[in-house]
Image 1 (cartoon, rainbow, N blue to C red):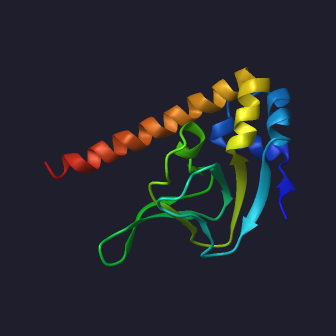
Image 2 (cartoon, rainbow, N blue to C red):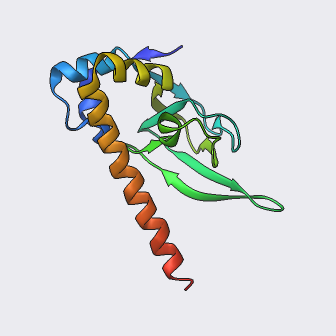
Image 3 (cartoon, helix red, strand yellow):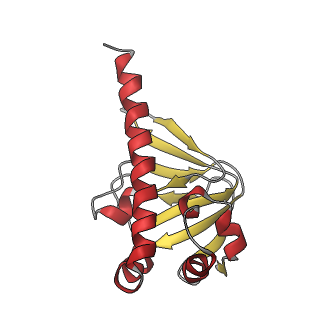
Length: 150
């Protein structure tokens, strides 16, 4: 059963680092906390994405299918996020996400994010700026990996 998130926990996560206590209080009522057992599949490559996950404890493996198997392409740890693209567009998931241990997550649905866009645009703008920082960092890391092949 999902649990509300104490805004003191939100303060510890980079995604929410630029928010005031009042803003964190609003966010805490729009998101929830959930515990997943090891090897729980959170999302599957190709499916519609509607949820962003923030790791409080444990971790998530990001997995891509290969011709004959699957390969872990990233490990998401405590304080990091997974599924961020699903809040920005409605495209299919680009990979599969699976917990690599018992994992406690903050869950942000696309609906709750859209509600924040409408009712609290300043909060949504802060979230979007942090999502852009994460996406930019990941794109730079991917580009760096390709440089090694050129």
